[in-house]
Image 1 (cartoon, rainbow, N blue to C red):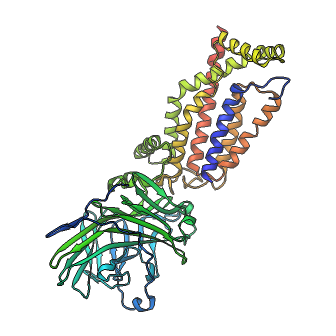
Image 2 (image 1 turned 135 degrees about the vertical axis):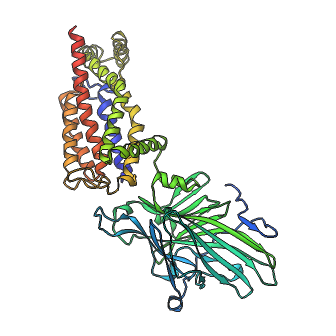
Image 3 (image 1 turned 45 degrees about the horizontal axis):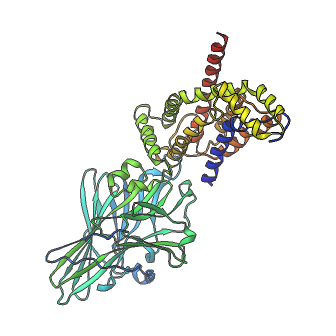
Length: 535
């Protein structure tokens, strides 16, 4: 829906500014890379073998495990996480610095909340050594508190009947949304052992809360230098598989949960939708092959946190690519960085948007001046063009040739009025993406009744004022249209107003300020041209 609305906006802009220049109306006539070795060995290192897509995990018997499993709470400055001894898995993760609503006392954002042991996230399977997701691990602690700047481990240990010990170690760092995770495997048995470790991530296929951040959500995988976000309806049955991704997980509009490869530790990621309303993402590691007495490890980095450009970039593995800024990301990123830069000084993202709008208007002033000057010149030529159309009404080729000669004589570019707007379209796309999907604007207040720049104006005041400014701007724009066409064009502000009613108020603010500045700019240019003509 957002893409269709954006396309409509851009097409309307082109139509509004380019129609009169390109199609002046006559008075009488109707017109796959190879994964690296991810295993460290005390004796020998085995090369990873190709691993087929993982079959769906069988649900664990809920009644049998629920009475035995224990939960371990981990507290950090940024989140509260609850782990289960079943599979050494994650059952709940709550972000402390983000709320589901703009109310500062509202419910905190919950990224993981799974009550069914069959679908705990980050559970583990290694069929070669008999490890399944329902296996119970022994934890190294009952609770864990990690202060800012501290680094602490929480480990879960499981021993197979054949003497293979698996330690699943999480390393937390206070003040960081990233978590290190490693499987440390030791073969204390008498026979050779081998397995491909698989880590299961889960996510509801239907949001359990009706929050605006779920406007877009689902699986996200970055592989072969490409971000792929699958639609839920396309994941039934076999689902989708990806070879050697740098990271894979789940994302909504503002938050991300992902497993990142460390040293080629992911050979594949397989995503599917289950009949029970859960999305499964099976992360498969290279094969481990251990001789008796041998020890190996495979490592990952986890991320559960906001889609903040700076925070994601600090995690590595191109995690910042989770923010889809569209075709013009090279422009959108500097605009987003500029937004954050000005916020450091004004402490209000609404004012930051206004500052950026003013700067863009100044940068494009020469193009705008050229555009309006061209439209004014075209307006002056309308009587002569009408004469030529009447004179050559039965010879279109001769008429077109005469009109082109008229343009050349008066040094007028017929597309000069719309060309500057075409040049500005990439900036509009980029700013649209930067404002629409920026977590910085989420629940960020501006002033008065606008207390969430990522949400719509609750009273529709700014979209209506924006529509009024469009009418004023349209009346000030030089036009070569006949009265009927002018009436049709007057409907454009109404269309824009209705489209912008449910747009984020930060985006409406940008468009409104841009219109006001354009009106001021048009008034100044018109006076300058009139003064030059008077001389």
